[in-house]
Image 1 (cartoon, rainbow, N blue to C red):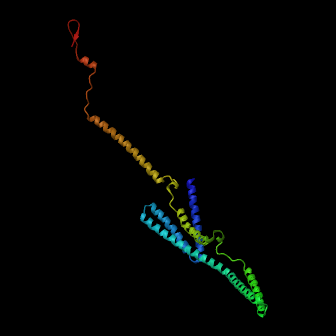
Image 2 (cartoon, rainbow, N blue to C red):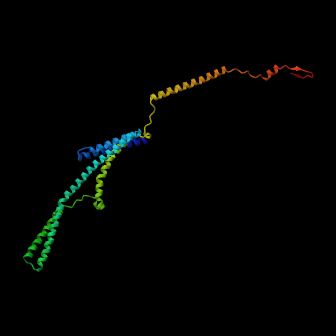
Image 3 (cartoon, helix red, strand yellow):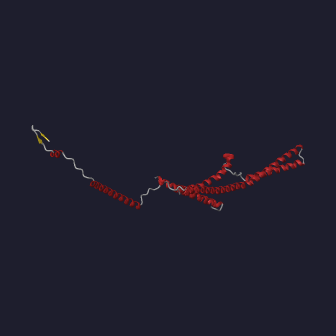
Length: 282
């Protein structure tokens, strides 16, 4: 079960890495017309895999060189993504500024009309304080025209709608919105671009020993082991026969020691002598 889950994770990692690489390739092609960034990410993944295999084989020099090159390729890929998103962010800011330009100009015209209206009101107030002469009447006409101009400029400004903001987070985080927008313009894309080689490296990495499938010995190995066992048994038989033959030969070479006489033989070998008194002696 653990091996099945591990192999499933490897398959998922490979698919996710290919998706991230393909998405980055499409974005780079749309922006730059080249696939430098995704190619660098794929090369970084291959170098990471080679580095891991070399480290497993204890080829430390190759592992170190491949690791350095993999980091370099990942840096190149990140730089390409940074440039692409910087250009995209600049284009977005320029588009918002272009959309706001008519409104900015209308606001400036309205401010000028208000300033002219205020100046005319002050002149009229100063001139008409002593009586309504010809100049006062002309100023009254100018004041009416200035008011009409202000209303017209205000109507034009209203037709242009509200001013668009470059950052939608300005109302939430205030002055930090610029930093937030810059980070969000770069961080996700770089994370996806660097996740692709990491996922591919995991998917194609050497399988750990605990997750490898246990395979039986090959038929040639089984036959060789059987022949070795038979030869060992035959060797044991020959060793036992040799040991038995050596024992027999040793017995033939050693002189046979006479067995000690039994008590009956000793008594038979000593004749009894009858003496006076009916007693016997030897």
